[in-house]
Amino acid sequence: MVTLPMLKRRPDVARHVRKLIVHPRRQGTFEFKFEDSATVSSAIRNLAASGNLEALTTFAWDDAELPYYDDMWFALRVRCPQLKFVKTSLGAYLPHSDAHVFDFSNLRGFSVALTRSFYEFRTDGFFGSDSHHPLSMKLWKMLIERCPDLEELAIDGSSPFPVDMHMILEGNWPRLQKLYLGDVVLDWGMGAHHAVKNPFIDFLERHPALQNIKFSRHNVLPQHLASLDSPDMKLTSFSGTLSQLASLPPIHYLTLTSVAFTESMHTRDVTAVTVGSVLQSMPNLRSLKISFHLHSIYDSGNLLRSLVTSCPYLTHLQLTCTQQPSFQLETFAKAIKGFTKLRTLDLAIVRYPGDDSLAMGAERIALTNPRLRAFSLTFLPFSHPFHQPLSFPLLLFNIRSSARGNFRLMCDEHGLPHCLRAYERRRVVWPWIFGHSTRTRQYTVDLRPSGFPGKAQGGMLGFMTLLTESSSAGEEMRMFLFCLLLLSLAIWGYAASKRITGEEEIILPLSVYQRVGLA
Image (cartoon, rainbow, N blue to C red; front, side, top):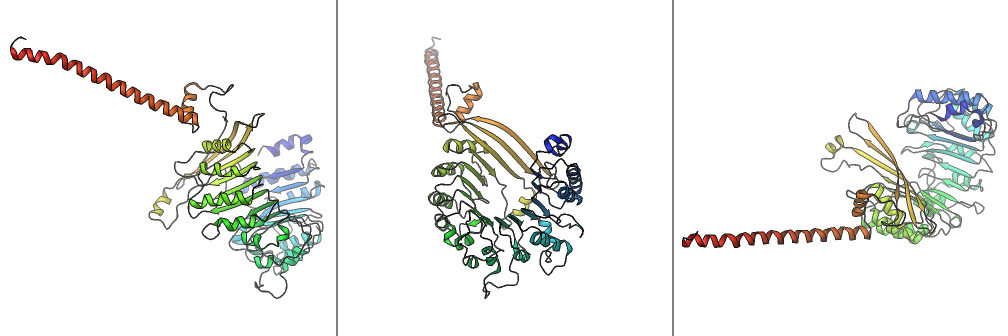
């Protein structure tokens, strides 16, 4: 925690802060601690009470639970008059009925993240209209009655057991532009073949200003989404399942520029042609987030070719393959050359044994695709399935490791790759009670070919680098050394044979002399 004490010491800097995102957990820790929450919430309360955050417009509390000191919200509400966007989280520990977290008015953006602990302990209809929980009633009263100009609303969370959230359908926000919904149910108790129009579809039609929407499979059925009749709605971003996107009225395909699939697709059930046929109907698509579970290694080539054909104008691609088999980096680097407009890339795969390392894979991608500006490469940990033989002993001694690298490609004035600036972070989870370890490093890789004017010569290190690189120069150097080795062996063999022949020429006459008695 360095930023908050600095803002307290420097009120001249704090007065210019407009957006503040707080992560109370200490760096390198993943579990929730009340001590961290208390320390950070107290610091924010004192900082806001001082009046130095008068320019603050956006505040986000990113933690597993609500702040330890609830009066932090009171200080933000009273002493930050320009605060219009608030984000918080709900976990297992809910505050008392007089909490200040839902006392805001005239907000333009509100977001609440439902953590895993909330789904585990609060699946009793906390958000439903049948619930008389005072905190729940305060939430809906704040959103529906005191925030009529709401532009952004997000109630996000992930769980196989969704919670009832149909009270949101009572809201009417004419300026609503962004709606993000996680694993919540909006039509609880209504069948799939309800006689009247689905209430959530009616809610969407009442908000034609919507541009960005995110659904989960629990929000709306695809057949209901197909009945959406809102020609004035200009959707630019859609997040949901493939079936939901395919059921969306085609009129919205023309305005979509960003698509994100919230569930991983199994190529055994969904073919690459099916995905490509849906994406091909979006001529303005520029950003794509997609996750796959490949059935075989042959599916990877078909998938990449289908994406290149259906989305040739992508500028951002986020591709994830959660299990083996996965993409081979050499094949992947060559396949994405068809994305001639691609500028940013985020690739997450399970690394093949013997495949390129993080640095070598990044260098291969950069040299093959010099149009990229920045990209990230993630090696996901390999998981041992329980159904395989000896899987349980492997789990007892399993060492799970993951690695992520962020890379920025620098080119010269001619557009040729010059260098690659990298930041790597590796995390190893040790078995039993040994915890985990994290290692980071920063480095720069010179991408210019060997012998290029101005490139630093590394002596023996440079020679070994040239010897091991996968370029044509490296192949020629390895072939030259191999031929030199063969020549050396031939010379050594010839010299050894001449020496043996000479000794035989001298010893043979002496033996003859001994036989005739002349020695």
